[in-house]
Image (cartoon, rainbow over all chains, first blue to last red; front, side, top):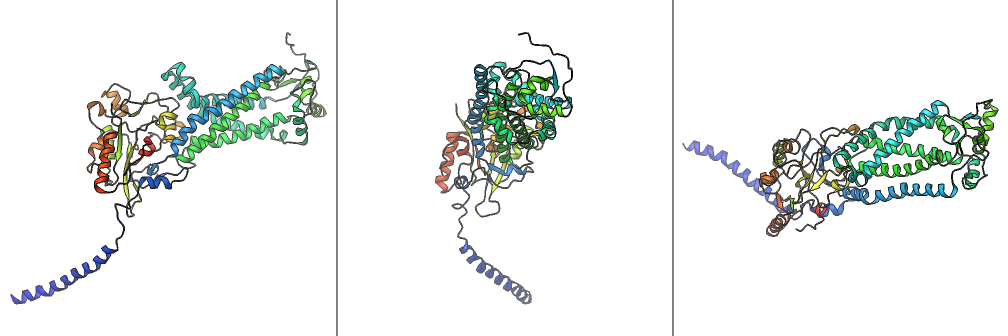
Length: 340
Length: 198
């Protein structure tokens, strides 16, 4: 028996020593723990104060959706404020402002006539492919523009008139049209750039055209221009730059999270909306001068054949170039004269 | 009527995720959608805190303000609900939401997000209370049965509180007074513009 006790003692003694050592080591460690897990824990106020613009209070998440790790993004409220207060102002000023401006111009200046009247002879201004490309892009633009305006302002303007169910249905189809017509629109922008860029390089002549007010303000004034005058070049570059910005911002909205998280989506919707409203205002002026605003202008994109007198007044140098190439309008049948 | 709110006392949250699981089970929430989630701030560092977050049912809710089809409405209790019949799945509410509450059943390309889904405060939707149609779209309507949201009722540490905003704020303040610390009323400043205390 004593041998068993002594044997136990020989085991216990080192064990006790080990325990003693453990406490001896642990005690100073406890003393070193100056951090107070209650007082010095994360605090929401401090996290919110430390946030910079567009940043989020973020942590770790155990569900697969990584973006759910963003706990609070106060920027959402700023985006709401932009949508609710800024955007209607930008839209109102751009679109209603442009409409008022054009109406006033029509009232004061009236329709810009062909001074020498229709000659009855025509010259080809836009070939069928150019007209096709223009109208595909234009049709897309109109549907994209209307469905886009509906997304932003339909709730205030259209919803009270047709009721929630009909409006929701319309907006749903509008959204689908917006998403899918974006692609032919982008193709149209790219094609127009490729086909027309060579005639749209700014030159010194454009400066003279601008200084003369494009001949828009007074009768009998027609600063010379080649195929496109400075005003048309302006529209061209507005369409190209606007189209690229719309395509880029729209692409990131069509394929969310390619550009980043919700913050980038907020930024791209703001870009998309502002550029769109300015773009629509610009195109309103384009539609005006191509239809109501100027006699003989619509034919260019209608039949493609413009009256020679119109061409000589607005694009004198271009007509000379065409004649030099031997593309003179030879014996074209007299066109129907407007009954006025 | 009372203005109901959620309050997560992060100093009590043990990140057990029972609220998340209970919510998914109660409403048959589809795969991939989380109406509630637990986010851990400063994970692994001293003083880390976990916060259970879902739709906060904001005052002047950003989602409702930006919805192009105006499919949101606020109930007399202050719960922000939406109509899946009107929703077009555009994603605007997700851009505006400070708490990442709106969820979509599909991946999202080409506007094919599907109808938005979010926490209903266990209050269903515009359909008649506790009908199969309401359950299919929005899940259980516990509020109509006089019960509080399942997430808060399930919470084992009573970290997640639901109910009258004034009362749960009072409970939280009492806790902070008694124990001497509190990491804040998470989301309240952003959702209700109330200044958190403690």
